[in-house]
Length: 111
Image (spheres, rainbow, N blue to C red):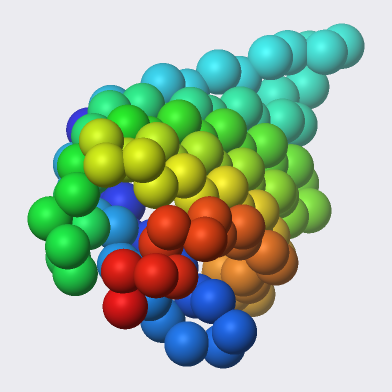
């Protein structure tokens, strides 16, 4: 199990914060006796700290263990119709960088 904390922004303003405990699945494919890549999935439910909406979480992470860089893709499906899609990167400094997240009109109207 792993804890997720995903801030959601629209027009540079935080409109939501999704948190929860989800299941982690790890895959380490071997190629030519090298364990270079790691694939991880997170699946479960999380809750909006702002509205209480419950989200189904589907996250896929691809990591290069040698370079220590990776990309994270997350889909959040809310039980009230919200749908957030996000992309993040991870680099060898340990920084998690937000790239983009799409926010439906219904989420912006909730403010």
